Length: 362
Ligand SMILES: Cc1cc2nc3c(=O)[nH]c(=O)nc-3n(C[C@H](O)[C@H](O)[C@H](O)COP(=O)(O)OP(=O)(O)OC[C@H]3O[C@@H](n4cnc5c(N)ncnc54)[C@H](O)[C@@H]3O)c2cc1C
Image (cartoon, rainbow, N blue to C red; front, side, top):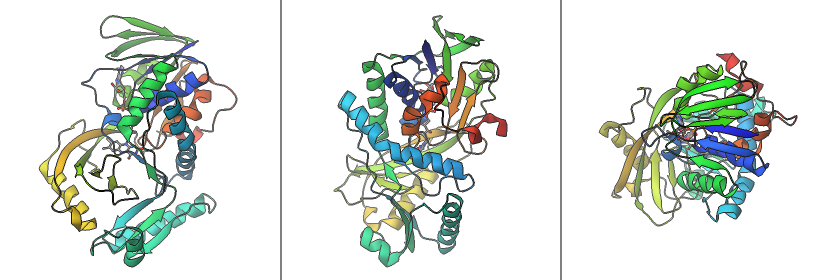
């Protein structure tokens, strides 16, 4: 049985990798370079603190994925030789505003209770935080540390996944824009923009923002929208930052990545100077020694958002073998997608309970 996967971003490739590890046959069809591709423009966090504040099962699912990450990264390294620079020493969120800090502490406390108490985090005042991260500036009033958080090099992840899929015998076709689907319960035939066709007995729609167009052909609502995020990166610096935060991290090559903004402006991936300045100002507020440092690059990319920001894992109500997968934190969830979703895709008994993430909620 061949599973067709539409979309070769981190979501589609992680599922492909997991299926191939189980010995399944996979054909990944990935669109053109003009497509929006969140997997090539993201911040690279494997982030848990604060996720699922209104949905404990999302918090648990993300945390389960974080727990699977070391083995997932190790599998990729063994197979491809690519070290994707996973670090899970914990993460710190920095606060310059008292009310924001108080609100976040209250949210984490309530989430901690909702998940049964096992939710490690520490509230640090300025001096406590300075012991952990000596470079913080006087505007930082405190922060939240959690050992659950980490980060990775997301471009190396994508490269390793592509290589792993091919090494395991998967067929990964690029420039393969799917423009139509003919479906029956266990027989799918997709039409490509270049006139080619591809066939499979199961299909996974993992096309990011492209899913909204193809979804209805498989019986999905696929209600995804774009949310723009801008990111900056500095020149390479001596290593000083051991812990990533939601807005600042030092990447494995030494640059400090600053981001990411959130803008509901539709499918617009152009940067603007106002946002870049705001992000840079925040970075200098937290780490004043960054003020004279050069920025070498900035970019905007589009997040793939469901209406409530939670993932969607949906079996088609029309066709037995069709699945739809999308999420807004595809790096964090990549390990769960590789290790746990294949069983759900092939419909075996060991499926994780994903009922909270069905499309029925919309
Ligand atoms: C600025 C920013 C920061 C982020 N930071 C983080 C973070 O720190 N941690 C985290 O966990 N997540 C983060 N994310 C989210 C993460 O990047 C996404 O969840 C993830 O990349 C989504 O992967 P995807 O494969 O679903 O989508 P994409 O990467 O968009 O891939 C979809 C693929 O489908 C293909 N496609 C589309 N239509 C078709 C078609 N018709 N036929 C064939 N192929 C098609 C496209 O070519 C594309 O390659 C961030 C995102 C952004 C934008």
